[in-house]
Image (cartoon, rainbow, N blue to C red; front, side, top):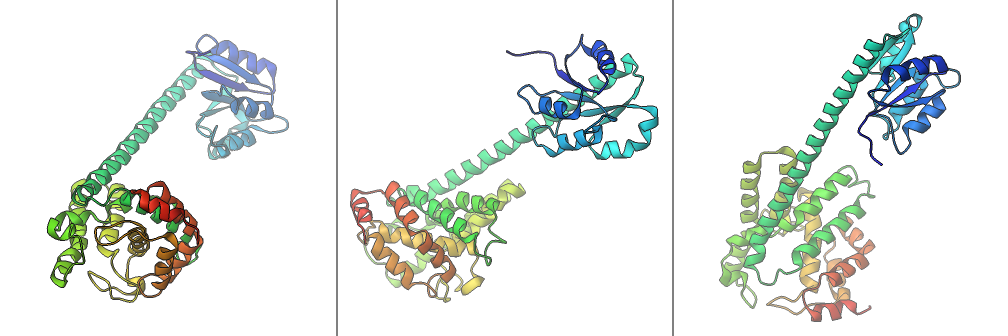
Length: 368
């Protein structure tokens, strides 16, 4: 059952005071009443909560300040406006009342026109505040959608160029997520890898190979090993990716949107760097390599190993794991390899779920 009238909760330990307020407001609002603080909290936390509360201060048991504090401490009731109804000699505690969350005071004995005006004013203010919060929520959702569309559009550029990409983007995205989540428990990484950052890494990972749009087909799709000159051209996909994402950052301009693009740029540019300094494009070494790139390196190589490529057959999970372990301290950050080993079964399950070919699926199902 729905009601058009807004709900006012009146709280006072004296029934006569409640009767006065009910008589003043009942034509405009639905009224609920409580004779003590405990009952008031029960009503406020119920299925049909009040839109505003008129709260007496001096009550036995829980006084009005304690009730107000309890309401503000509970996320479910924190946004309900509270108007204290108080006698003149209690006004010395006005500061305490506002500190405990009240939005206004009404003096006893109450004046009905003042009561109606104050209640109406604060209900209107609450309505406008709620509307503003909803607009902010919608705007946030719009920006999140913009981010998702940006990721999808840019990632699709690379996918349309490389006919072997398939589930690679999806698989590596999940590998990055479980590695980052596992590293959260490592004190060396936890200050950086909060839940927001892990989410941004997950969302930006699909852009790691966006720079392949700048690599000629003859090299990108060559069914065999690249010669030295061809490999030099292929290596430039890290620079192409960085530059593409930089242009997207400049065009979008929103800090929280460009935040995920910054991670995407770091991943695109540094995921082929190696822990021992022999990678590209800059030959960075150890922790000089941005953490997003170090995480992506493990995800990318594992996926290349278990996937069929024009230049190689797929490897089993056990063989891929062995190669990854061999690269610890040389190709890969040893701490990230520890995280990989802790979650290797998760990697195998992701690879199975998003496998592109039956041949890959059969090998992944093999036990050690």
